[in-house]
Amino acid sequence: MAVQISAVCYGFLNSYAYGPPQYKEGLLLGKHDESGLVDYILASMPFPLRSSKNPPSIPGQEILGIYRCVPEREPFEFSLNDLLSIPRNCKYFCLAEYQDSQISLKLFRVNPSRQIPSTSPIEYFIFPSLPESDDAKEPHPQTGFPKDSSISGRLDSIGHQNSRLRQVMTKLLTEFSK
Image (cartoon, rainbow, N blue to C red; front, side, top):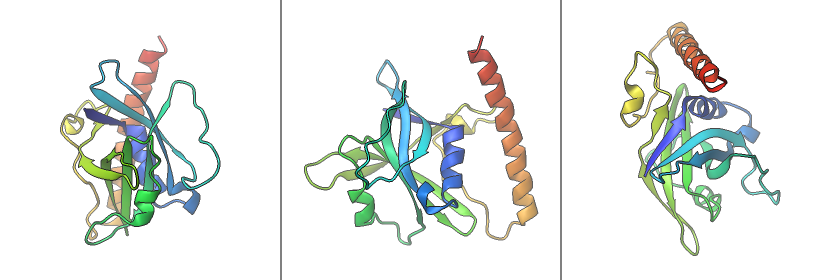
Protein backbone atom coordinates (compact mmCIF):
# COMPACT_ATOMS: atom_id res chain seq x y z
CA MET A 1 0.00 0.00 0.00
CA ALA A 2 1.32 3.43 -0.96
CA VAL A 3 1.25 6.42 1.36
CA GLN A 4 0.96 9.98 0.10
CA ILE A 5 1.51 13.00 2.34
CA SER A 6 0.15 16.39 1.33
CA ALA A 7 2.76 19.09 0.84
CA VAL A 8 0.94 21.24 3.39
CA CYS A 9 1.08 18.50 6.03
CA TYR A 10 4.75 17.92 5.22
CA GLY A 11 5.44 21.63 5.73
CA PHE A 12 3.58 21.72 9.05
CA LEU A 13 5.44 18.65 10.34
CA ASN A 14 8.73 20.38 9.53
CA SER A 15 7.67 23.55 11.33
CA TYR A 16 6.36 21.70 14.41
CA ALA A 17 9.87 20.41 15.12
CA TYR A 18 11.00 23.92 16.05
CA GLY A 19 7.72 24.96 17.68
CA PRO A 20 6.64 25.00 21.32
CA PRO A 21 6.34 21.66 23.16
CA GLN A 22 2.57 21.38 22.65
CA TYR A 23 3.20 21.09 18.87
CA LYS A 24 5.76 18.28 19.11
CA GLU A 25 3.23 15.44 19.04
CA GLY A 26 -0.16 14.90 17.55
CA LEU A 27 -2.40 13.17 15.06
CA LEU A 28 -2.07 12.45 11.34
CA LEU A 29 -5.42 12.91 9.61
CA GLY A 30 -6.43 11.63 6.21
CA LYS A 31 -8.44 9.14 4.25
CA HIS A 32 -8.18 5.82 2.46
CA ASP A 33 -8.54 5.54 -1.30
CA GLU A 34 -11.62 3.58 -2.38
CA SER A 35 -9.35 1.06 -4.10
CA GLY A 36 -7.59 0.38 -0.80
CA LEU A 37 -4.20 0.83 -2.47
CA VAL A 38 -3.35 4.33 -1.21
CA ASP A 39 -3.63 6.13 2.11
CA TYR A 40 -3.61 9.93 1.95
CA ILE A 41 -2.25 11.84 4.94
CA LEU A 42 -3.79 15.27 4.43
CA ALA A 43 -3.18 17.11 7.69
CA SER A 44 -1.50 16.99 11.05
CA MET A 45 -3.03 18.26 14.26
CA PRO A 46 -1.17 18.84 17.53
CA PHE A 47 -2.73 16.71 20.26
CA PRO A 48 -1.31 15.37 23.55
CA LEU A 49 -0.85 11.65 22.84
CA ARG A 50 -0.79 10.48 26.43
CA SER A 51 -3.82 12.30 27.75
CA SER A 52 -7.18 11.19 28.98
CA LYS A 53 -8.88 13.39 26.37
CA ASN A 54 -10.55 11.71 23.43
CA PRO A 55 -9.32 12.88 20.03
CA PRO A 56 -11.76 15.28 18.35
CA SER A 57 -14.00 13.97 15.60
CA ILE A 58 -13.31 15.73 12.31
CA PRO A 59 -15.91 15.18 9.56
CA GLY A 60 -14.46 13.56 6.44
CA GLN A 61 -11.12 12.78 8.10
CA GLU A 62 -9.87 9.65 9.80
CA ILE A 63 -7.04 9.43 12.29
CA LEU A 64 -4.48 7.43 10.31
CA GLY A 65 -1.56 7.82 12.67
CA ILE A 66 0.46 9.97 15.00
CA TYR A 67 3.61 12.07 14.82
CA ARG A 68 6.34 12.97 17.30
CA CYS A 69 9.13 15.55 16.96
CA VAL A 70 12.32 14.65 18.82
CA PRO A 71 15.97 15.72 18.78
CA GLU A 72 18.02 13.58 16.39
CA ARG A 73 19.39 10.38 17.89
CA GLU A 74 22.63 8.81 16.69
CA PRO A 75 22.43 5.93 16.04
CA PHE A 76 18.70 5.94 15.31
CA GLU A 77 16.56 3.96 17.71
CA PHE A 78 13.03 4.15 19.03
CA SER A 79 12.65 5.22 22.61
CA LEU A 80 10.22 3.39 24.84
CA ASN A 81 8.29 6.67 25.01
CA ASP A 82 7.88 6.62 21.21
CA LEU A 83 6.52 3.08 21.21
CA LEU A 84 4.22 3.59 24.20
CA SER A 85 2.67 6.69 22.61
CA ILE A 86 1.33 4.67 19.65
CA PRO A 87 -2.40 3.93 20.09
CA ARG A 88 -3.75 0.49 19.17
CA ASN A 89 -5.79 1.64 16.15
CA CYS A 90 -2.92 3.63 14.63
CA LYS A 91 -1.67 2.68 11.13
CA TYR A 92 1.29 5.07 10.79
CA PHE A 93 3.90 6.69 13.01
CA CYS A 94 5.82 9.71 11.71
CA LEU A 95 9.03 10.60 13.51
CA ALA A 96 10.40 14.08 12.83
CA GLU A 97 14.00 14.27 14.04
CA TYR A 98 15.63 17.68 14.18
CA GLN A 99 19.12 18.99 14.82
CA ASP A 100 20.27 22.57 14.29
CA SER A 101 18.79 23.42 10.88
CA GLN A 102 18.24 19.87 9.64
CA ILE A 103 15.00 17.93 9.84
CA SER A 104 14.46 14.32 8.89
CA LEU A 105 10.94 12.89 8.52
CA LYS A 106 10.66 9.12 8.80
CA LEU A 107 7.40 7.26 8.31
CA PHE A 108 6.71 3.84 9.80
CA ARG A 109 3.89 1.35 9.40
CA VAL A 110 2.60 0.21 12.78
CA ASN A 111 2.31 -3.54 13.22
CA PRO A 112 -0.13 -4.03 16.09
CA SER A 113 0.55 -6.55 18.80
CA ARG A 114 -0.83 -7.34 22.22
CA GLN A 115 1.76 -5.37 24.18
CA ILE A 116 4.11 -2.86 22.57
CA PRO A 117 3.50 -2.38 18.82
CA SER A 118 6.32 -2.94 16.37
CA THR A 119 7.09 -0.70 13.41
CA SER A 120 8.59 -1.05 9.97
CA PRO A 121 9.93 1.85 7.87
CA ILE A 122 8.04 2.71 4.69
CA GLU A 123 8.47 5.15 1.82
CA TYR A 124 6.05 7.98 1.22
CA PHE A 125 5.25 10.33 -1.63
CA ILE A 126 4.48 14.03 -1.42
CA PHE A 127 1.51 15.40 -3.38
CA PRO A 128 0.71 17.53 -5.29
CA SER A 129 3.88 17.45 -7.29
CA LEU A 130 5.19 20.82 -8.34
CA PRO A 131 4.75 21.35 -12.11
CA GLU A 132 8.45 21.75 -12.90
CA SER A 133 9.53 19.04 -10.49
CA ASP A 134 9.42 15.26 -10.56
CA ASP A 135 10.35 14.98 -6.86
CA ALA A 136 6.93 13.75 -5.80
CA LYS A 137 6.96 10.86 -8.29
CA GLU A 138 9.84 9.14 -6.55
CA PRO A 139 9.93 8.05 -2.90
CA HIS A 140 10.85 11.08 -0.87
CA PRO A 141 14.47 11.21 0.29
CA GLN A 142 15.42 12.54 3.70
CA THR A 143 16.02 16.25 3.26
CA GLY A 144 17.98 18.87 5.12
CA PHE A 145 20.10 21.90 4.52
CA PRO A 146 23.86 21.55 4.71
CA LYS A 147 25.19 23.05 7.93
CA ASP A 148 27.59 25.31 6.04
CA SER A 149 24.95 26.94 3.81
CA SER A 150 24.21 30.58 4.56
CA ILE A 151 21.03 31.52 6.37
CA SER A 152 20.08 34.06 3.70
CA GLY A 153 20.50 31.36 1.02
CA ARG A 154 18.29 28.98 2.98
CA LEU A 155 15.66 31.68 3.53
CA ASP A 156 15.67 32.51 -0.19
CA SER A 157 15.25 28.83 -1.02
CA ILE A 158 12.40 28.45 1.47
CA GLY A 159 10.72 31.59 0.13
CA HIS A 160 11.00 30.32 -3.45
CA GLN A 161 9.56 26.90 -2.52
CA ASN A 162 6.73 28.56 -0.56
CA SER A 163 5.74 30.73 -3.52
CA ARG A 164 5.76 27.71 -5.86
CA LEU A 165 3.67 25.69 -3.40
CA ARG A 166 1.25 28.60 -2.93
CA GLN A 167 0.73 28.77 -6.72
CA VAL A 168 0.04 25.04 -6.95
CA MET A 169 -2.32 25.03 -3.96
CA THR A 170 -4.22 28.08 -5.31
CA LYS A 171 -4.63 26.32 -8.66
CA LEU A 172 -5.89 23.16 -6.94
CA LEU A 173 -8.34 25.08 -4.75
CA THR A 174 -9.79 26.92 -7.75
CA GLU A 175 -10.17 23.63 -9.66
CA PHE A 176 -11.89 21.90 -6.73
CA SER A 177 -14.23 24.85 -6.08
CA LYS A 178 -15.66 24.70 -9.64
